[in-house]
Image (cartoon, rainbow, N blue to C red; front, side, top):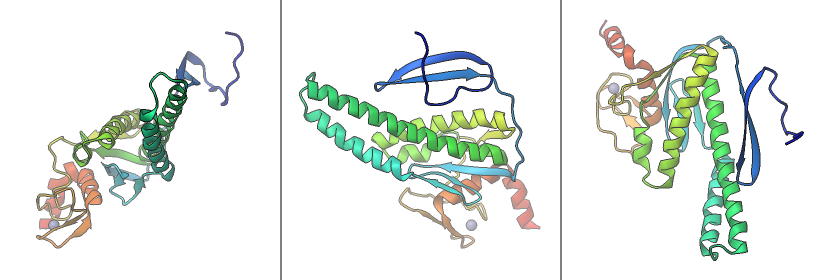
Length: 237
Ligand SMILES: [Zn+2]
């Protein structure tokens, strides 16, 4: 193959394996390297994270990560291009041209998504000793039945995979809440349980009067999951 020039510098550590792939007309090179874990100082013992579609992640300390503007713009454009493609004669030159454009934009959407997930998971794993997330993105799956739903699904698994890797790398612990744990139905203040249809964005507790954003409430519940009994005891005292 000879010499190849790359956009980015090669990793400094010993490269064990190189994979070259072609996606949507572009070439990519990935390096397999071994790294030693780098334990970072932690600013908070434990954080709960609720995953969604518009708000990618709502954390129990109030931090929110929402849809980047570039992502919204790219998905809109992708929908338009796909309509154009469907009107072209299959197999024609114009169709092939349009198809490549669609593939490139698909790639861009996926790249922005992966990049956003990288930023969130790095923040979580670097700064917290324990990160608690849901077992399955149940609420996300119910919110949408179409394309957005399947994207959310894929994002959830990508999120979990990256977080697992980074937890190891930065010396934190990833904890998965029980899949039947009703994080969105419980009051994060008193533990009162009520049905929470998806249209209700605020959790209003008839028992203690708490009114709190639905996702934030769920994330606090995830943070407190195994501590709940201890918290109840403190309330009784
Ligand atoms: Zn309450």
